[in-house]
Picture 1: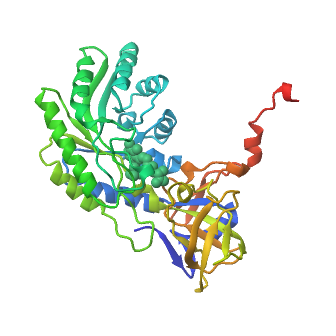
Picture 2: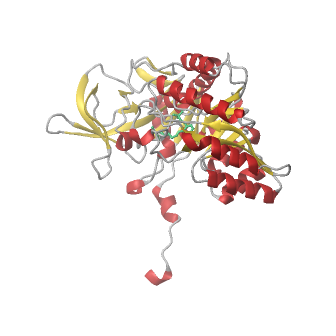
Picture 3: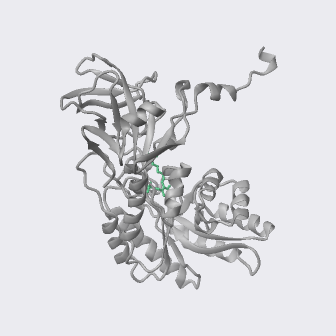
Length: 423
Ligand code: LLP
């Protein structure tokens, strides 16, 4: 459930008309609902209420806006980060360092040192080499790095190939069959002084999962691995089960609920005796935001017209990258319908949001939204074609604020330099 509803024929975010926001901020613009974000955070937490010891680390990559992180910090979420840039955002939002998990295959030595200095709670190691490097950096700094080993369970998540992470051929984690040996060698690096402290295992098999079955298969394998490692006399106190729960992008689609997910996790992990960590991203942020856009022009096409909107693939890359579907709704529908190709102004054919889609009839100047744009929307925006970096707005009841300004092409141009030898 979210808080984007029609009132008197006009789409609102909570109590604010999207037409009023478009008037004040211009388009395109992302609009987030604070109440929806907070609700999703609570529903996720409630879904896990039966579990004895839980740590929630919001996947910052899904939507790293500072105001969004503030809302989630207030809901008691820590953060899953994949760069020092994301870590600094989580800290700036007031998330305690101890609640931050650092994931990612390519952490640099400088990033590890900065994260150790900040005192983050856990590093999720993606290779033995990374663990050896982290141990040395931590020892040199007189710090102890709490760490988990990310394992690739070779389970097919059944999602889009570009967002699948748990198959043997993917770059993530260490191979399942070698994980116990790697864990033992990394655990042996921890002496009595500072350095590496192996405490757990981590898994994340992909994003936008439509079914719980692959997650259950992966978690079951992780439980067996945990037991095998403990049988060697090594401690495994933390099990990070990642993110990945999918969300409906089309009205009426049904996805596993956080309660169903929680029930599955409770069943699989009943005898684990470990703190369970979660890294949800999309399920928290996805349906908490829309991309507000205005129709520039309607142009005849061969089989149906092109609706050219002022948002483009640089603002919302998911359709171009993953053939993703985002529902398109008029802000003030007339009740008429049309079938259209929805495209942006960018000069390549991948700048297409939908082909031959039945939609609300729209005309030049009309406002519309792409739904389910709160996750992997603004965060993946670029300035391709020298377009502005898209602004972000948050609504809270009957008030709203710009939470990321539009960065116009002139500002971006001002950061560029022409060397004297070109003058
Ligand atoms: N943990 C790790 C280690 C991850 O790599 C990810 C997402 C998450 C957690 C959060 O997954 P979620 O709960 O959001 O599914 N740009 C793509 C999605 C990429 C996801 C990358 N990793 C998209 O727009 O669909």
